[in-house]
Length: 617
Image (cartoon, rainbow, N blue to C red; front, side, top):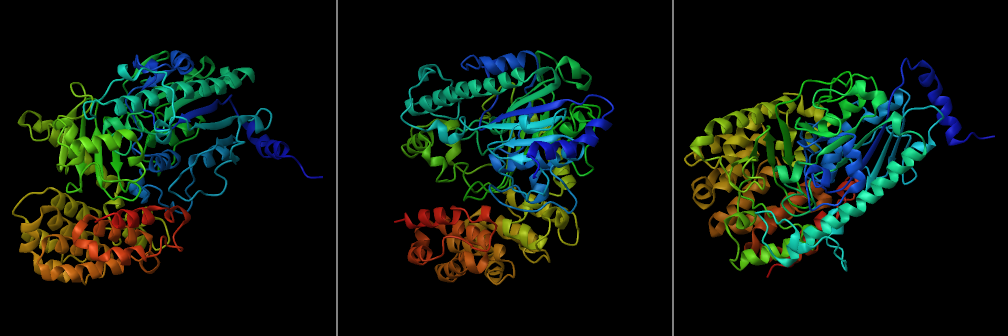
């Protein structure tokens, strides 16, 4: 007669339960989507969150927590792996890569130690999930399915606060839009105020859902044995929060409530019933969960535990990143300390507000863009629709909305130099393979783990690529000869940044380096050919246009070249605007997807780019 799932769990857990030398805590996560530090207990008087406020009253709110990534998939990938996605090649929205052989996602280690691990229900990882990660990851996932006496790690994901729910109409506003705080970068319009008010309405609804889960914990008699965490998966779903690695997009505030029975597991920075300014991030959650269970963090973890017996001293810096967001490429890195946020834009020629079909469904995005085109925005509001500077620096104590860039101010030169140095050291420490074009992350891994490829100097010369990226994106004048030299390097990643440096500097630089760019149209690396073609088509001679268009349309075919090359080529065609109008019909005839790509890469991104190009007139 077949045994039940509960009986099977009991047979697996029994030796671990018996062997436990001391009671181990249960761990409950209540997570939600797209919400920054906007609980009432965080000091937001506009917010109404009575259930979570009670949780905060018996726990500690980490006010300076960063999600590391400002969008769900790479943020959740950071959580589950304990490794920065630019190190695993997993930074891009809804991509898919592998972890090195032998690595586990952290619930797998908890399960080995006898924990029952359930997830209800969102995963959204950019890394292939190893077998044995969860006992149950489904809409039925619950601690109640564990064996008697078995410690549990259970996750409940609440979706009502997601970006898509901000724009859901019709809606009856509970929070008064007239009383909403409009950040300095948004225009003060009724559409913007309604979106912010609806965001807070959704938070209140989510608060009730979280309260129901906490009530179940009490009903089951488990509250005194369970450490409870609450957090959102990145900043608010409003534009220039979600998707941007500023504090506005990364600050989430993690709540940790440790019952008295397990208070020994608290560490520096934990203040029961109070707030902590300790810098922590999503990359720290995996080692922290292992530490709370009495397990040493794994050697490959790039974060550090902030609770439990293996808690490390507080970090001085937190790090963020931005890669491809849906169908649009960008490359941004950020770092903060207790006061300042430093942002390094590696593609400053791209505007902040690149068109993303999904983001344009939000009323705020549309009215914001319209007012920009009508010339009705002030300097802080206009910035989103214009190219980026190579570096940004913000003082959070005087500029919570991060609109006053101090990077060129002599008064802050020392701060800029310190954070720039920390950023560079971090890039080299994690060997950020995300500085390569997305297609090359996969081609260099050759079906294996990009982390392994990135940590092999022969495959990925990290410092050479970083040096090239820094020079290219600095926008310094008079470096044409250096960029041309980069274009003759033996590594295609260096050559890519050499060509990018010329593209980013515009017509004069491209025309002065026309011959190296023409040669690059025959480069072995598709990514280099794409950049050279875009640069020459945009800024070269009339005679360059047709050969460049032919290069781009050939590389845009997703079945022939793969999804990642196709997306890069289609972005270049779209960026050319009227100059690429002759390709409209040929683009329309391309396949909509790469059938050989992983399922997550066979998304609608190619279709969205084709639609954007088709809309040109």
